[in-house]
Image 1 (cartoon, helix red, strand yellow):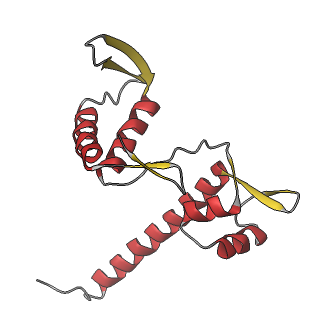
Image 2 (cartoon, rainbow, N blue to C red; image 1 turned 180 degrees about the horizontal axis):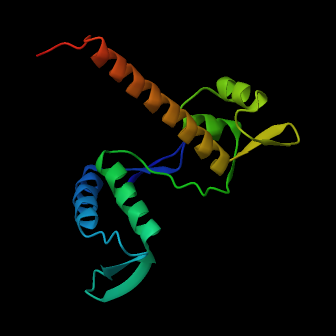
Length: 157
């Protein structure tokens, strides 16, 4: 069983969790039917009773992602896209300071609303902002790599 981090209430993976997740993500990824909108999985209880069920492919892919993260020793938290986050939760998800996040909110870079004195951010809006920033970073890295190659600035081994 995973150890619980009391501050975050997120299960911390044990070594056994990591091993099982590594194998589980590998097996599930190898069996993915990318042409289907559903995936059939079979679950077996400790008593040996088996039950098969169909799940949406999006849930199947999410399960693979969760197992992949756990296999790397990462704790995983699921946040519904319609969840409203506090500024501290949003800052934690972006891995930035709370004051920096508040500057982003005040500059209207991320939509939010006020509930009394408190700001609330939809997880969906936060993830959209993160995707935009990640795409810009990736584009900048691609441009820098191309420029480095163009100017022959890379080192040969």
